[in-house]
Image (cartoon, rainbow, N blue to C red):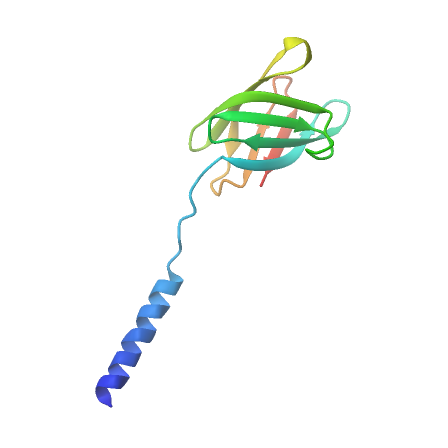
Length: 122
């Protein structure tokens, strides 16, 4: 009986320790992000589809399905920043440099080339 009780205590203790262990979620920028850009005339809805092959699609509109402005581009990132490059109408190149990625990889904040602030989040 004593052995059974000892085995039971060890099992419960082992389960408690392993269930309390936090798994580190992988830090990846890849995925779908949505947010706002505060332009001079209004607040615009933004959507980013960040792909694993270092390409990005930027949507500007209420949602990605109905957005009338869709732009393809590329991105580069470090552990704490991301930079996007894409072209808009007439071949105008847009560069969003060194936007800050929060520690949880759930929010990105930055300023565009005109100084307007923006954010996107998961």
